[in-house]
Image (cartoon, rainbow, N blue to C red):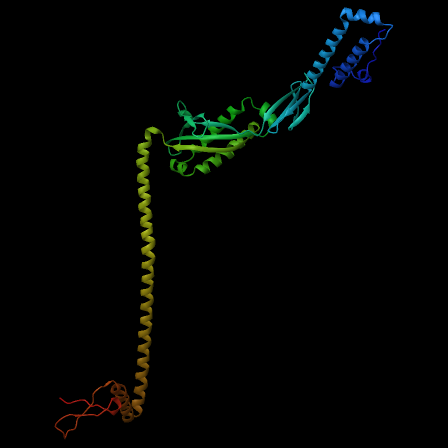
Length: 368
């Protein structure tokens, strides 16, 4: 007797394509029916033997195996894993649905598609050269890439610039759908920005300010890439080599050597200037100060002598004799202590008499 299978309640409530839960429930019911139909009591032994002889039971086993395989396939197609360095962009019928983080996630088979984007890997674009082998001793080639590196500076000189742009993805959706070829967009924007910056700078300024050039280029490139909606974030722009072209390198080296000699001579002259000029200024200032001091000293002394003479003259006019004697005694008081030998001249004596100075050793000067 064939048992009528009643549909589950959710099959009556929902119309349309079956959900994964409905498929799993249907497979379980079919397996259950297959095992119930294969078992039998004593009254149905002949019928069971007839079914076995007809090959019905192996067919049901095969159906069960196929059902399990289909179930595993559906489960495998319904779940996906996002690695730690990735982000998953889920599309439903080709339209963006959501962005998922690392982990295990569910999707509807044959309805949802998943695009996995590596957001941690740093991508690189090279300009003016290409890396052949990246190892401890990397090998590079510049053959056929001179057009990328040759640029014209603001002072009409030709310069050879080689650089690297490193970037990573910050917006997986914009990276996948806003720009068709993000790598080419990065190359075009980088080359346009670097050429514009180099074209507005002088040759010598570029050689001495590489870091400033790279910082400015990164800022302008990021602004342009965001305006295009590429979904990338610049990590670094590194200038590998900034030199004149090979054909003009000898002349450039000579000019550079001459410029270095000029700078050296200028530095030596500035050093001598800084050494001698302050010294000369100090000496001149010292002489000026000494002259002013000497002038003040002589002027004050002259004023003092004048005042003293006027005072003596006034006293002399009042008492000539007394003033004359006082002046004589003061002069003798100043002169006599400096005299070592004293002779007394007497008009009655025919020879000079030495004065015995007892205050200086008790010896008298000898006459000649």
